[in-house]
Length: 560
Ligand SMILES: C[S@@+](CC[C@H](N)C(=O)[O-])C[C@H]1O[C@@H](n2cnc3c(N)ncnc32)[C@H](O)[C@@H]1O
Image (cartoon, rainbow, N blue to C red; front, side, top):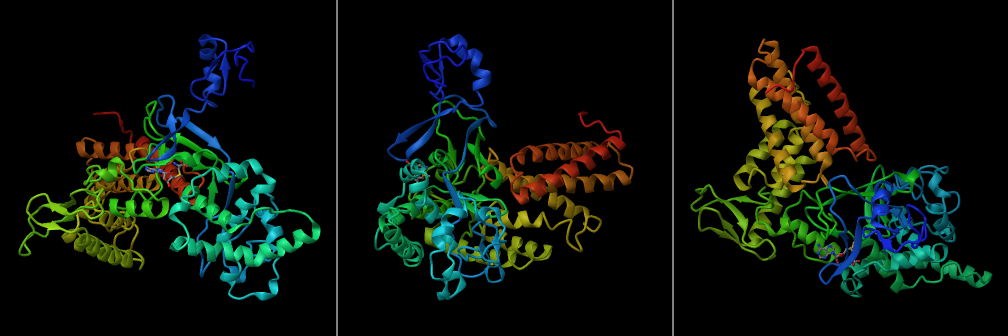
């Protein structure tokens, strides 16, 4: 539609939609009339720029949770550029993990694939295009499989291949921030990219390609320079979004990449699957006021402030100063807090928090006594504890193992500390499922313990991720487990004849109802991941069972 024609009446128009500036109107009246239709297409943001962040997205109108912000297709996607030294590798056609040694091969380039008929192999927007280049190598020289087939270099190659086939997309891609100044010659990152991507592509594929180009006079890939490849790898590392469905895929989006980081993001995004070309949909997760920046999270919500900030510094080259990072208590959760050991091995009952969490050399002070710890002391202790927790978590622990870890942790860290959070989240998924702790075997005390663990976890999760942007699966699991444990307690009392006359029973049933409804809502955008799909199914089965039970027993949940 021309921007000089009114979208409502097709007459000449002078006014523009202030939201997207893409559609024109002859009058305010016609703009109002057209809004119902335009609302779904109107981009509610503009691109701004600040000295600290660079380019960013700024809301041009107030947004409510759930409002659509942006829908777009990626410029390019491919296997997430993880270096794989052993174990499964991604199929270049669909990125699903396969065992390279045992897999069939691509008929043209010989890369291990899930199936020679995998649709992505001949799709020119997928493996099809790169396959022509990968097929130029002399395959007689196979060394180690993981060295020979390097799927971690494919996304960079796909970016390079845009230059002839989609020059506009290529130009958009090269506009993105690469932070080359911090990844220059001599840095570990530079050496890694030089070896893993540039030398690999250049030695194996670009040399035969240049020979072929000389022979045929065709210029297939004009720019394969070292500088461009380093820039592209920087662009991928800084801007690509990871799509973890049933495969490990990374994609670059033309506008979505402009979302800045915040440890309490106000947007949530989801990806369609491969048949929709991995289209991204971004929605408001929290209320966003006109003029506020639209943010996402580049790091892990269940890491403590020190780990998140370090990760962002190392991978995205900035120091986060968001509300959560600036708050020693991490939004009142005490997610990184330690128990103060006091003096003379006599704990004082206080907790240790960083004096200034934005200072990487901060001291930690006690809320009750004079004891101070250095940041190095805290890091050492927390890392030691982390290693122990990981070790237990990875060894198919029993309820008893995890209970023992939790008891040990309580000497050193706050009950909401992220190490405790991880252990408790595993525990609530073992109570009720493990021999000795099956529903009929759990004591009333254990049931009460599980229910309060669920409530504690829920409280922390909601504070850290109020928009359910990053932790919907965690939240969904907690809500479902809380409903399950409540139901076991209710049914026990019910069988003893204590029906809803007993106030506590009705309250527990109301909590179950709330948990199931909330879990459904929290997981509404989680249908494209296998874990999300499974949990969604489980929750809808549980909800059906719950409501059948309520009906059968003629219970009025709305009673006070
Ligand atoms: C995916 S890009 C976002 C677009 C980028 N601002 C630009 O101008 O192209 C990520 C980069 O943006 C900057 N950035 C994003 N969030 C930030 C934040 N909260 N504070 C400071 N810099 C941030 C960092 O330079 C980061 O490496």
